[in-house]
Image (cartoon, rainbow, N blue to C red; front, top):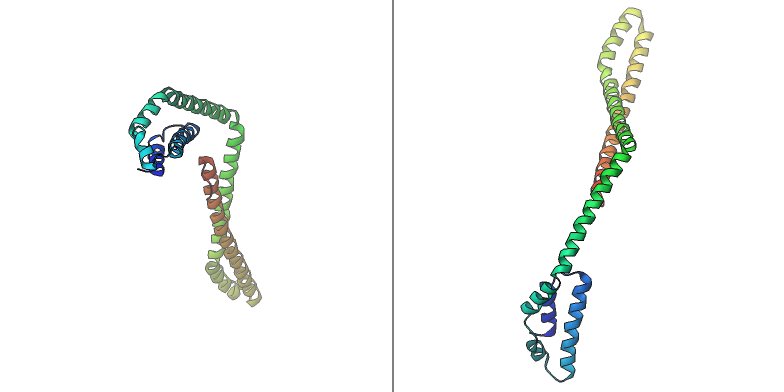
Length: 189
């Protein structure tokens, strides 16, 4: 086994150590091998003169078991404190986030109302056309033509409103996904 293979296996077996401790250990064994190489020992013999990777790794992990345990304990306590602060912030900021949530719901309600209005305006054309025929027969051609023109204008505006609301709904859905991803800590959409 050469120096590179030895250090790679040692790095793999010591993955539980902190990055700083791991680099310190790898550097230590790299220097030991380099010193043997300077004394004229071949790279394979230098690695063979050392303990096996398993023995070195188990000894170092045993030596650092207390540090690893305290690091895990510190991380658990840190997470607990973070959760506690998060709950406190959620409670203290309740008036803010509940207001934002209500505004969000109100925006969706307004969009749904405008979508329904646009659909109603667009679908009113057939009924208004039938009404225009009866108006034309009862009061004269000018009233019937006026009513038919008004029906076309209102239906056209309804179609434009409906299409606009569809684009607005798609934008709101993307915005909602963006906000939820940010709250969960994910980047991007």
